[in-house]
Length: 168
Image (tube, rainbow, N blue to C red; front, side, top):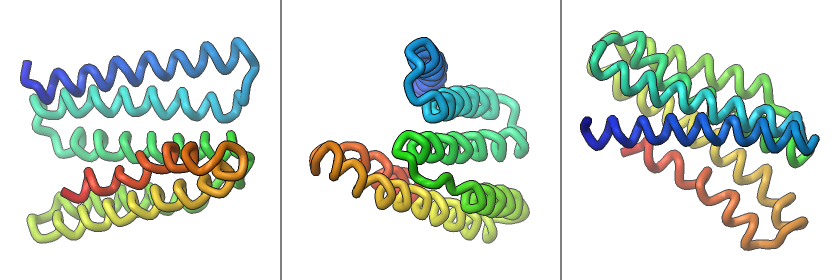
């Protein structure tokens, strides 16, 4: 197995275990079940996306490539909804639906030709950046107030860094 495939399988296993862990702890202890359910689903969707990514390499299917990308974006949106539920913030369903629809359309258009692929990638990364910045902004005030500046920075940092990984 290549290092990439090994890494993706590890991500899938960790996502599966994290998803099941969220379900077990959250529902067994009856702690923030609405948020926990979303965290579990986000991890399980991420695990599925990692496995589709592994499979798409051998299948050479444009549909699997699109599905793998969309699963990662869906996981991000569901994770954000979990954070919103946990912090008792309003859930941004319309924003999420628009984001996912725009990304799906951009990914589909990007398959038409090489020039459009770059535009599609910029559209998806721009949308990803928007969602991540919104997570940081939404959570910062609540986390800072309740847990301090360090906790707010630690929670926000992965979301602030995520778009940079995809912009490469």
